[in-house]
Length: 260
Image (cartoon, rainbow, N blue to C red):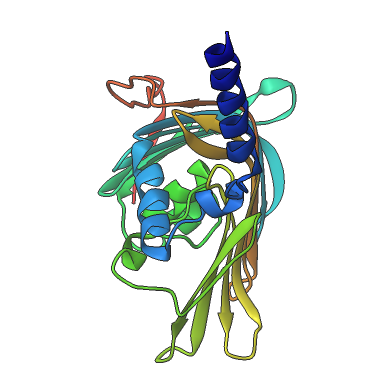
């Protein structure tokens, strides 16, 4: 009996010792060095192979200002399909763009414009002066960090809630700033500034949901102050990495085709 009592006393003593050892804060356990953080963020972006969403798209640029319902389908790395709808779900326009060619179908006028994807075409179709890859990332709520994979940030600030990475480009006198949530690794802010701290380009991403452990924003705001243009995306529904065999745009037999 004495042995049992002594054993129990020893057990309780050991438990009390363990409970007195201070546990490592969760935030410290989660903190990543800059190189691992960038690799994880870029790996998350590349996990998204297909993307489908619908919601409201708002554009403000010198060429066009307005908003409407839309549906977008992305098949990486080379296909974007967008449909724009008016009041009561009226189909206004559809476009399918690859890195090499495009088709833009003006449903109301029953005209289709087709041609090679050359400089200026995306601006004509989407009323935004963006490169193809930038447009794809904008719709997916992502930021391309490929060029940062081999570069350490010049400034790396971390607190319990977020990472902030700053890359300085002395030749162009600009700096890029990325803000990432520690919990979940959602990239929620991006800014391009000049050395006077004026914002030249800005992206804000909100209301994230996880798809295959990848945080995807339902709301995105992208502002290009240099070209006086902005785009806001507010998704109602999103599907990620669903099988898409082929992306097509079926035109009516009586459509008027105009080659560009």
